[in-house]
Amino acid sequence: MPTLKTVLVLCTGNSCRSQMGEAILNHDLAGLVRGVSAGTSPQPLVAEGAIAALKLAGLPTAGLAPKSVEAVMDEDIDLVVSVCDNARETCPVFPRPVQRIHVPFHDPHGEPLASFVAVRDDIRARLVPAVRAALGL
Image 1 (tube, helix red, strand yellow):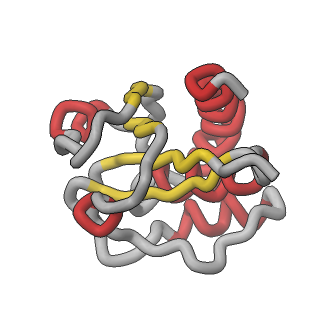
Image 2 (cartoon, rainbow, N blue to C red; image 1 turned 30 degrees about the vertical axis):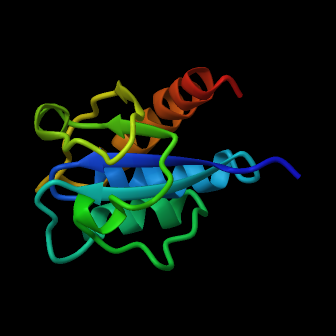
């Protein structure tokens, strides 16, 4: 059985885009990658719209919770994907060299559920292939 590659999806608040990215990677690339997410300035809760959009697509949401990038700093991360410009610019230095890519997405906070669904679909359409390409999967 191949070793799973760990992909960190990094955002500022870790309450929406990065959480959806984590769930989508863990579902769509199951057996190939282990998606985790974190924020440079995490919010207290995952956005209700993000949870609803994931559930509408039949994606699991159990265990999703905002966490700081410091909480995952000691993990053996193979790829860091920043999904917002602020996270890209404030991305911390990891204890060992790690490949980084930037795949930005619209922030739907404060918008109707349809915006969260559109961002979810955009994440699925662009993040999954970008991770596959970056890791040679």
